[in-house]
Length: 487
Ligand code: ADP
Image (cartoon, rainbow, N blue to C red):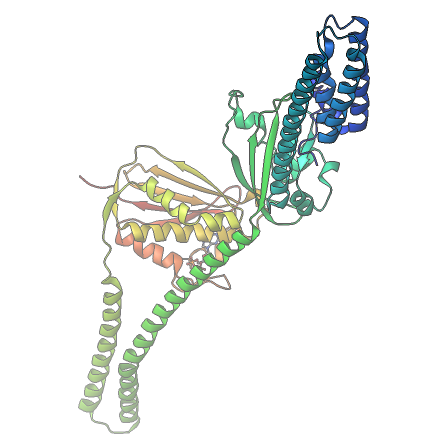
């Protein structure tokens, strides 16, 4: 099996001749015989004055290359016979010994030549076969394409399996389109530096629209005798890897969600337990008051005492709630100095997977020269993550082409830093607009309704604020401010 099919451009004559000889061993051996006869005739015609016998090496080489060791040895035998028969009677040597000596030396040299050439050919074929075998056994699909002629020069078995078609029936353009290689051509890889032979692989992840599977496509231009636009493409199925990554992310999200729910449940249970007692006491004092007031004659002092005790219990309930609030707030922010643009980038990196899986493109427009800010980085990352996550959820039903997220930073007239997160989602209906920041308000089946209220608490604790607006071309934008660092 040959590894490379010939490129379309005309080959140099020597290469074409070698190819012909390799592919037609019988015809090549026939030609070798004709050449032997020609050399013998020339020798005979010139009376062995010019000693053409050295030219027997040409047909011997041809026969060995085309037909292997046996064909080479056969041509050596035929040429030696010609030499022996025709030169035997006319040789100029004084004795026959010298004639036979020359004959033996010639045969030994010819056989050594045949052995060397046959060995070389064998080694080349073996190397070629081993290389092809490695490529054929690869799990990844590999093909070589000539961008100029659009021809697939080589494709391994995995490619046929992957696309469920014989790749030879397709053009480089067809395959390029299918695997999103439109812009990854040799030209784009090398740019103006076509002389670079060791160009690096260009790699990208693409989704095959026909099978829905994910592939990593790597392209590298390779030097090719007669064409400058030949490249090797290696396509690896990474669907399982992607799925495992998504599953891991899902587990992390679930853990996160469960931890939040567990914390909430704990707070709610202890609150219910502690507040229940004073509430029950208030109810009993109220009952007592009602009973006293129902009697035609009652002791005013008793009613006052009951009402005072009821008031004390109500204050106690208030203190319990205050304690819980203090406990939650006791996790004070630990502010540091940082650049808001770096924080925005860091937050988006955390959401890289979700953005990619939801086919949302993030467009950043970060103002240069913003003042540093002084805030709790972790809490602010949580704010940005919440807002971006909401934006991703809001664009869930939008067509993929309009799932664009715009994140910008700017400086307001009063010097405050403004961060805006815009989406192209479903927008916010007027009716619910005022309730968004209320704890536990959510329109999502899986929502907790705590995101925006937490964002507001965090920002207000830092001296900032949060609000939202409707985009003229659909979707909405959440804005928040942070005071600049004061020197
Ligand atoms: P959750 O995300 O758990 O529902 P949030 O407090 O973060 O809680 O959001 C409250 C509600 O605000 C959401 O359920 C949704 O209805 C609405 N909302 C938030 N962000 C957006 C947005 N970018 N586009 C449309 N609606 C939004």
